[in-house]
Image (cartoon, rainbow, N blue to C red; front, side, top):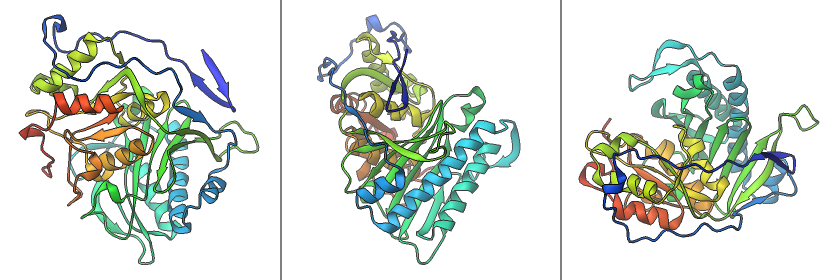
Length: 367
C-alpha cells in the first residue's frame, strides 16, 4: 500500500519468513550472547518538512564552498547516470576492466560521466574509480579527492533491479595512506523506482536523503532534501551478502541459522547499495558480507566499505570488519579489501562475536 509524505511515495513491505540457507537449522546449536531485542516502534527516519533544494541545504548547513562544489558534481553525475540507466542497453560489449571482468555498456558510461563532472567542477584534485583502480590527477588547484564505484550492481541491471553509485570525498590530493575516519563526505545514490541520494558530511549531524524530482513540475530535475536519519534501532531484518561463504565459514553459517531460527525478515536483492541503504530508511536491520577460505573478501575499502561505513555511522548505525569499525581500516593502496557488517549496535556486536576475523578474513590487498 503506497502512502505519500511531502510528495514522496513510500511503500510498506509485508513481512515474510526466511527459509534456511544452510540445512536443517532446527538441529544447529547457535551461539550468541546478544539477546534478540524487540523492535522499537518509534520511527528513526524524520521526513524533511522543507524539501529544500540541494544547493540551499548545503548553504544552510555551512558546508565549505570547495566541498559543496565537489558534492554537487557528484549529484550532477548521478542525475545523468540515472537517466542513462533507464534507457541503457544491457547487451555485453567487448570491453574489460583492469581485473578482467566483462563490463556492461552502462558501466563505461557511468565511469565517464563521473570523471567529466569531477573534472569540470574545479575542486577535485584526484579521482579514482573502482573500474580502473588508480589515482588519476584531475586539478592541481583541487582541494578534495574522490573515490567511487560508478555503478555497483551493474550485473543485475538487465533484471531491472535497483543499482547504485558509491563515493567518498577525502580532503587533499591523496587516496592512499588514509582511513575512512578522514572522510569529508560520502554518499550512496540509488537508481530504483525513484532516484535518491543518501549523503553524510563531516560536521553535519545525521545522514540525509535527497530525491531527484521527476514529475515534470517546476522542480523537475532538481535534487530536494526529503528525509533525515539519526538512529538505527534493533529489528529483525537481514541482508546476507557473499552467502556462499557460509559453506566454509562456520561462524557465518551459525549466524545465518540464528537469523532464521529467530524469524528475521530476509530483505536482500544482490545490490549492495539498496541492501545497505534500506537499513537507514527502515531504521533497523543488518547487512553483512563476510569472507571464507574459498570465498575471499572482494569489497574494496576505498571505493565501497569506507564510504558506506562513514554514511551508516553518521546515520546512527554501527560498522565492523569483524573486530573494529571499518573506518579504522588503513587504506594503504587502492587494492585493500575487507569483509564488513553494517547495522544496529547489537546486530554488529553479534557479527563480531559469531564471525569475527578468522585468519582467512584478514584485510587483504590480494587481487
